[in-house]
Length: 115
Length: 114
Image 1 (cartoon, one colour):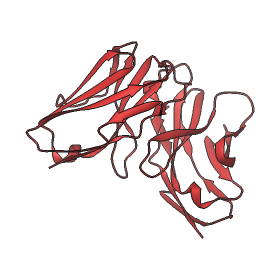
Image 2 (cartoon, one colour):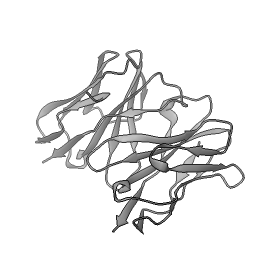
Image 3 (cartoon, chains in turn green, yellow):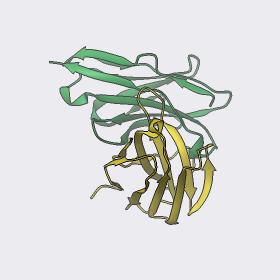
């Protein structure tokens, strides 16, 4: 993979509203796609990943993402957010068959939830 | 007990000091990593170890020196650092170094260089 772009550095939403965090990538080969979440003062943890098969991937905490190969996107969605979803979200991409050292992380999107 | 444990959580050091960051994983993984996380920058991979052998060194200055004595432990030795090295240093592990694996991160060590 050559790059991954998270289009929004910050996304403010009201509690119980839906949210979409955008991620686009570029690569000349098939890829694996990941979303990680970082809660305040913690390390990153995996939300979900796409390896193959169904393009709609469901993850933890009610999040899901859809792989769109033609648009080279892997946007993250949640139909109704909670205060506890306040965190930074990172999209990541790696080439299939490569090493984990080749994983590229985006710059992150900070999700802030307003009551 | 968390899967990947890092100590210390916070470290303040002078530019002439020598210190070390420690990481331990309790997941039985064979690959371990050091990442640097700076504000408003993507995660930067510094080093990768697979089965205790260094397999990746991403042009990291020699003032950072990794050590992997066994598959459960990883150190990052620090000496004569610069203020721009202040950042969150994240240790991570995965079952092996294949790209489809989930990477498990520790909570990080906040480093401030004064």
